[in-house]
Length: 245
Figure 1 (spheres, rainbow, N blue to C red):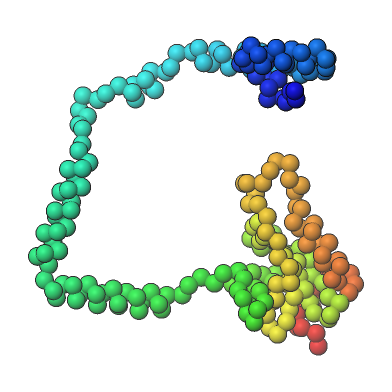
Figure 2: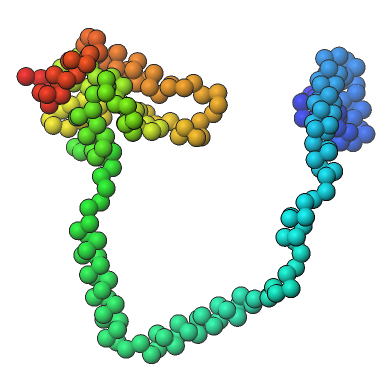
């Protein structure tokens, strides 16, 4: 019979049936290392009990028990009766409302639709164009105007700027939980690679910091025709609109 850690823990806690406990004891007799695991579990349980038992034995604070006491002024509310009353009010209002009011409401909703249609909708960071992803909004603006050497306090970080083997200017970036590489083409920044990870608050404490940026930098090195652009070369490329003359 295979004795798994869960069964050993149950044996150490005295939660097994006599038959299962006997099987575990036979296994312990044959495998002395199992006895060490049982003793380790019992030691851990004793340590936790010594820490938490005084807390569990402490009396419940008055401020919490007061919450459980019924209030003299409390009243029971019949929710079904409240719903019935509301439905009756709606029925009466619907029956007595003149038709011109319905027409006015319809006209108002149409007018609201026209107004909403004219409101500027925020542009997302990435859009699809001709079957490819292109940068938009704040991401496109950062790729066009932001230098890797001067970006303190920016929501979007430029990781690297380089000239690709095909002659295009490309830039690695990091925005929140997303990182990627975008290359200049026809006045747009086309997303060559994008990588989404876990938000910072949801990351495992064992996750390697900056792993996304490291992978993007490695990809950039494979794509680059030479070394990354320094500050002076970046400024010159920005001045030329990230296009080759």
